Image 1 (cartoon, rainbow, N blue to C red):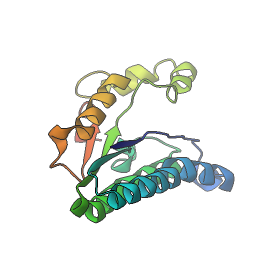
Image 2 (image 1 turned 120 degrees about the vertical axis):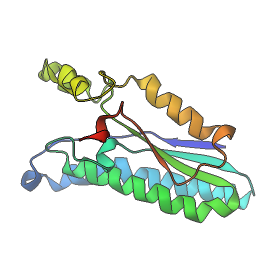
Image 3 (image 1 turned 60 degrees about the vertical axis):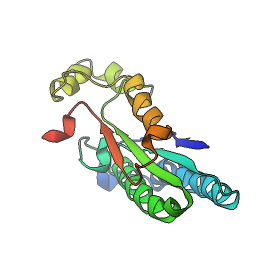
Length: 170
C-alpha cells in the first residue's frame, strides 16, 4: 500500500508582507494535508499489520533558500522534511517506510506562470544547474516510483533531491 503526498501551492510575497490567509493556505496544503493523510494511512497499515510506503513531496527549498519571496513555501517544505524523518522513526517498526522527494526547479503548472512572466527565467535556472536543464515531471516521478517500490524496502527517513546538482553550490 502506497501514499504519495504530492499536492503543493506557493504564493510568493515579501516576508514582512505575507498575508495570514496566504500563510494558512500554504501550510494547510503543503504541510497539514500530508500530515493528516499520512496519519490516516499509517494508522490503517498499523491496525491491519500491513507494510507500506509513504512518499512526501518536499523541495530543494527544504534545504536551500533558492527563491526570493518564498518564506512560507520554504518553511512548509522544511517541515515536510522533518515530518518525513520522524514519521519514519515512528512507523518503521511496523514495516512502513516514509521518505521524501525534493524536486528542484521543475517544468510544472506551478512554474509555468513564472516562465511566462519572466522569459529568461527557465534558462537562468538551467544555467545554475550542473546538468544544464530544469527537471521534467518524469524525473520526479522516477524517484517517487523507486521509493514506492520493493527495491526501496530498506530506505526510510530519507529525502532524495532530484535537482540536477543545483544544491551542490547554492
